[in-house]
Image 1 (tube, rainbow, N blue to C red):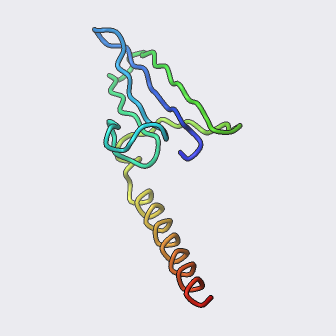
Image 2: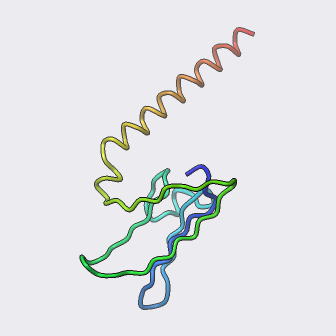
Image 3: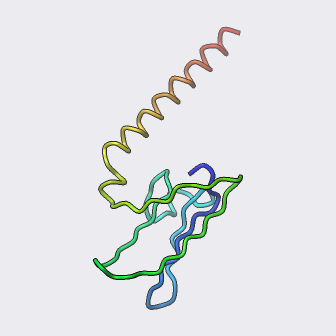
Length: 104
């Protein structure tokens, strides 16, 4: 997600358009799905065609992969393990910075 300043999904409804915001410009508290990754909630009946518009704006030249997956897959243990491992490595890195800073 680090590359997308704006990630907005436009979903048609009876009143016009529902806009779900994600990306760096939107805080986690204001997102419909409180996740560090770009995520949108889409409900659709089986075999029903639906038009969606996705607005993406990046900070640099970047072409990302877009996948549509279900809720269970998004919040699977694999994803949690990946985020946990990243947080663990970041913690180790910060400890090393503080340790070497204290030595100098």
